[in-house]
Image 1 (cartoon, rainbow, N blue to C red):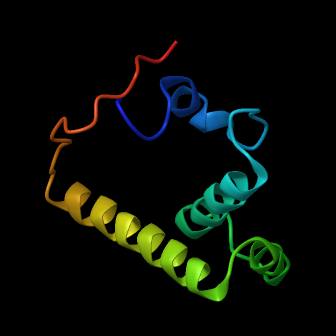
Image 2: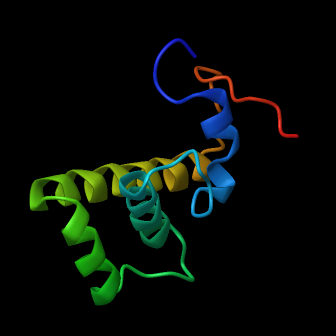
Length: 94
């Protein structure tokens, strides 16, 4: 990728919580999105307070909106068997 996330950072995404490639703000954003996405997790009051210490209200609204939109697209695309279009080539898994 010419701009944006490095290949190393992208490859380490599954381990973001422990990764040195992500700063505390990024880890909080990813954890927020993960808690919105996974059915076995929740954005608890305690976690929301932690997120509020890192992000403004406007940033949290935008973060939640983007995560909700991506969750919607994921469910919608799955129902209609819409496959990835190859716009973003991901690095090979090691």
